[in-house]
Image (cartoon, rainbow over all chains, first blue to last red; front, side, top):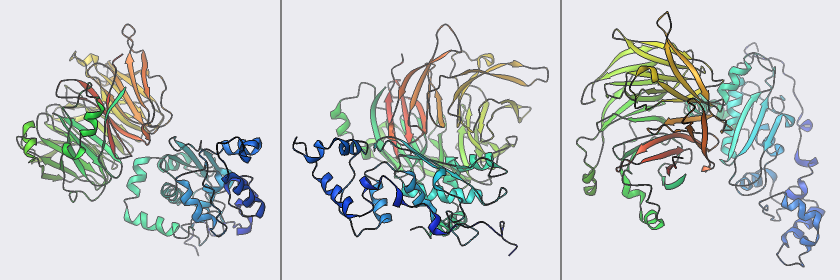
Length: 223
Length: 354
């Protein structure tokens, strides 16, 4: 097994990984499907401009709604699962939060181990930052800090490239993606950071068939 | 500044544009180079009707054979006083195209077409920028292989002899540009520096290293000074550190090396990498980059070296990044600004000089 750069990485069980379940945004994003939530969605669907509108009379709900411009699509989608529904919605609606970014990149495979980046804690929810007004004509920012399993990991650049490709393919073009190593996680931190965020180098890397092949393999486990 | 036209030309990023004698050339990730006739458009041409009747297809003169390059076309440059175009690609080659004896009125007959004259090989990997010297005699090219090559071209543009390979940058080189009147070259690099190169005894040597940016230098441009003296030479530069700087030639030291000093760092306008800077004949500097902002700076008339931002145009290509800007002169000798973006558009702007 000596061909591994890190032979014994720490592994997290899937059940330890963060999910949407505890997220307070669920209410309005309409992802979990409890009866209470469906009722709220139905309420939201009744929005109209008349004074009698139930929603307009409910200030608290209205405030929440205004925070979510433009108004999300509120289809009753009890049968649709989270991931497919999310990708479609990205084009039109809600501000994107860190859980969504995490969900997009968590299941990318490590180029060395048959494990996901989340299981190896290379990516985790707290190291993702999103600055998004939700307005479709404004630039938004995503910052992903990655932590390689060992500080001399020669695959750090490749992992970063995989994350970048995944996000560039999934997020609307208004997103600027920054991928950096968590402080102190790598010997050549600045060098790797510079390379990962050089638009021209990334574009050239994506035209390199070998590199693209490896990246495609890493992304093949994405849901 | 006012948007005069927006041309939708490519389905992918436009990395570079160049303009000469009314003709726009574009370089894109979609492997295509397009030639557009735009010299007739002027600042007074803001009539909505004109815009609507103005068909991009009518203006499109040619789309060059997309089998010439296998990867992204990164840079295009017209050879001065000719109809020759050079294009540098991530496939590590440079293609040379020509259209003989093109006259503007030929366009009506729609017989404009450019032919591939030569493919230049030599760089080990991605070519990132190509530039012709003002007399059209030299072609400079640079690459991720950390080298700048200077080629001597014959008159018809078919033969290229490499006269120098400059390997002093420690990282890949993003951009090369020639001085508008002298055979002086500036190269911008991922090593955060700019190098100035001059010809010495039939060879080319590094005359100065410009240190000061805290990130990749993406682009630089010389001042188009009316005074053709060495001691008034200045250069502006744009960097990944979001800054635009102006550098000034400040004489020669005892080792006969050129001294360049950073004369000014322009007022901070950008919130991300600055990919392109351009200096025009009226002394205005324009900068643009990842944040989609086009900024115009003007130097204080009494206090040289003090610059003010006189225009900040946000969302110039909605939320898309701008890769290249160029000041041009239209057929009526009017100065206009072009910008090229990831959205595949080239926008044409009229900029107020004050």
